[in-house]
Image 1 (cartoon, rainbow, N blue to C red):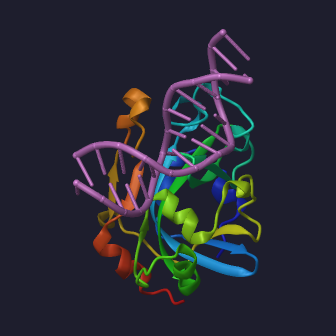
Image 2: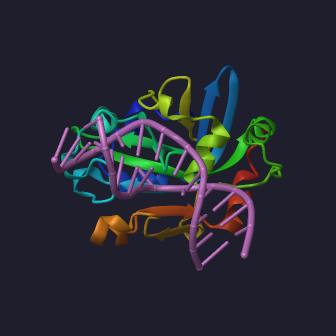
Length: 203
DNA sequence: CGTACGATCTGCT
DNA sequence: GCAGATCGTACGA
């Protein structure tokens, strides 16, 4: 079942980041459907989060989508090379975002493997936000897409990620954020559980 | 207009 | 463990 608009209109971005584990992120570009189970996320909490691009109510052409209605994509270029994909959640214009940091390819695996140019095994987990977008073909020009549409969306396939399978810790690469760098807004599925959880899904 | 740098990844040591 | 890749964005002059 595709996640509806209401799912993204949630003011508790930490809770949503945790809940997205086990959901399936899909893309459909040029008629090619790819999808993978979300295995790692990070929450970026509104204008008070020193690690967020929206910190201090900074509104620019790039960040504007975060201030809009929840349920859209926010994609930006990092280090001049990597396209990083975020889910915008939102109530009353508070710019929450969730960075998708890892997926396990499930749908269109062969296409994902050929497009990434690597001889990944079918069971390779794409851990790292730059790898996720490369696997699914997401680029910065896909920022602002409606996640209730047919190009990028997320589905709940009934995978339940139990609390014992989740590791929570501080976010990666945000040392510049001072005290906020210590916030435990990163969630990931234990390596050993990723496979079992995806086993019920078929390609 | 000039410039510094980043929510990273890879390959080499 | 560490440096290099590589460029849009943000911000100050």
